[in-house]
Image (cartoon, rainbow, N blue to C red):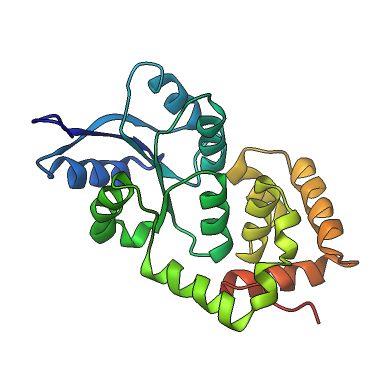
Length: 225
């Protein structure tokens, strides 16, 4: 940044306490300032009409939508080059890959944000990608232990919403719990479950559930055999 101009950061996070912690961490830096805060994708879109941040810090799971939607929305804008750092409470390798493919420049877990967020912001603003050591290790583990998964990943066939629901299934949530969390009807979630089952080639719902649980617990794509 030129002169005494500060780096402007926009935070998109729906948990007030966590958002406050991020704000304090960033504002402690002499050359950084939080120029705006949003709790939803809709609020973020409105803010972006009035502020011009140098970087966005975006939670992957938001009240009204997924952080994926905001990443894709920003990337679809003509000429938009605002770098995005994604925060997530989930450490599955596939989420990091999807975020980077969608256009994010970094991905860190929330539990590592206290020690990593400022470092990640600085690295991204220098033009580099940033992932936590944990995600990096799992990516390497996938390449070494499951090389075919990098080329033929069955979960790549799922949409972002389907992947989100599949993850919740793997966490042991029932249809009604998923519906409440995502502000959807139980019928809609049931339809998503059937689509996921069909795309992954399962005849029985319990086989899909076991597969989801293994994926969530292991962080890699399990074998269906």
